[in-house]
Length: 598
Image (tube, rainbow, N blue to C red; front, side, top):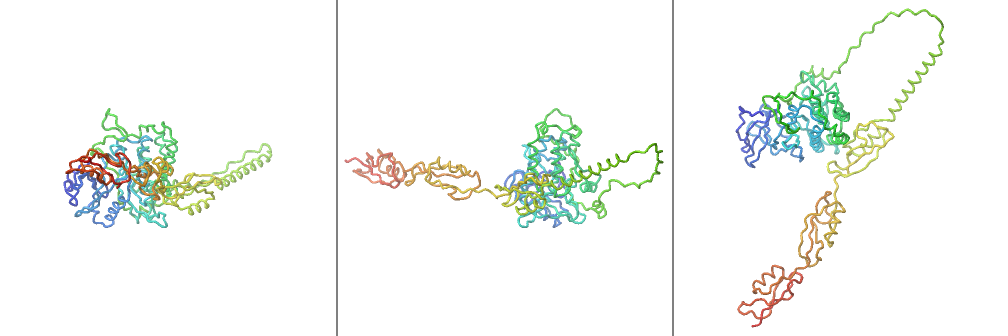
C-alpha cells in the first residue's frame, strides 16, 4: 500500500471535517486516501481530484456528477458516497471505506480463478451495474481496480468517476457519446469499440463489454487484447474479436465461451441489453455447470510465479496482498489524445493478406489419345453436381428464411417489441408479470433469449412488466386473530405486531383495527399490525383498602367510585364492592364500595 510519506495532504483536515491519514491508491484522475470523519467519528475513503485537473470545469463537473449519480443508488454491491466538497484547490468525495483488496490485487497474486470463484465475483458486479443501468446510469470504467472485495468476501463496485447519465425519451434510454475527435476516455484494455470511435453513440452496453473482458481475465489470468502501446490495444478492440477463454484455460465450459462472446460482441446491438440481461444469462449457464466444471482449477500457465514460497493455505478471496513496492503499477483510467493520423489508422480495416498476382503457367501437352471414351458419365456427373448445388443452395435459402435471431427488445414497450419481432417474421406471445425494478409496460425478458437463433415458426415468449405488485390491505375488523392472519396470508401479506387493548364495543379476541388501515396498497410480503380487543375491563378488587387507595385503583382501571356506609374520620377499610371484583364491565362504570356502619 502506498503510504504517501511525502504527500502534503497527509495530516490535513479537508473542509474542517475530514482528516487525511493514509494514501490508498492513485489513479489517472484522482488519489484515494483513508481518512476519518471527525464529526461522526467514522472511517471514510477520501477521493481527491488531482490539482492539475481541478481547474478544468469539465472534469470538476464530471467529478461532482459521480457523487450525485451514486447518491441515487442504494445497493449492497455499490460503494456509498457520503459527501462531496471542496477545500481550496482540492475537490473531493467522502465515500464508504471498504477494508479488503481489489480484484486486481487478487488476479495479480493468484492469476486465473476457478469458474466458481470468477462467477462469485462477477455476479455481484453485474447486480450493481444492473441497478445503475435501470436507474439510467452507465459506469464506463469497469475494470478489476474498481472491484473491491471486503475481508468478509462482499463484492462492491467503486469509482463511478466517468459515470454518464442517460437521457430518456418516452421512457426509453437514449445513447450518449464518449469520444470527441481524437480524445478517448477510460481504461484502454476494457474499452468497448464504440468508446474509441469519434462521436460514436454509447449506452449501458459499454459496461456489458467491459464485464465480458473482466470474466475473460478472471478465467484466464490475462487480458484478451494486449499491445506495445494503447493505440495497438484500441486497434484490436476495433478489429479483432475477443478469443474464447477455453483457448487458454481448456477446462472452461463452451457455455462460458459463449457468454464471453455474447458480452464482448464488437457490435453493441449483438450484446445483452444491459447488465441485468447478462446476469440472467450468466445465472442460467451457471445452473447447467457441474460441480467439476465449476471447481476445475485453471492450468499452471495462467498462474503467476510466487514471489515468496509459503505453506499457509488461504482462500480465494482472502489472499494476502504483496507489499506495494513489488507490484507493477495498475493500468489507469486516462484521457488519451490520439493524433489524427493514428486515429485514421485505427479506423482503417486491416488487410489479412495481400492477394498475389496470378502467374500464368504453360499448358502441359495433351497425352496421346489411346481410345475414345464415352462422354455420358461426364454429363451425368455434371448434372449430379449441379443438382447437389441446387439443393444445397435451396436448403440454405430455406434455412435462412426459416430461422432468425431474436431481436434485442429488452427495455422496449410492448408495441416496439411487437414491431421488432414482426420485422424478423417471428410470432410473439406476451405475458405480464409484476416487477419491482422494471417500469410497467417494458420488456423484462424473452424466451428464447436475445440473439438466440430460432425457427420463425416457433413462438417467442415476451415477458412484460406490470410494474410493482401492490396489495390492498383486507378489512379484518371484527374477525378473530386467526381469521385475520388467514386473510392476510391469503393475499400474500404477513402478520405484524399484535397489540391487545380493552374495548367496550368489540368482543374479546377480535380485531379492532389494522396498521396500515384497510384498503391501503402495500408491496407483497409487507407486514400488517393488528389491534385486538381484550373485551370489557375486569373490576379490580379494592376490599380492605382505604377510601383513597380504592379510588385510585378504580380510576386507574377506568372506573368511577361511590361510597356506601360510614367512614369515620376516613379511617375505615372497604368491606365490600359492587360490581364484585373480577366482573367485566365497560369503562366508566360506577363501582359502589361499602364501609362498615359504626
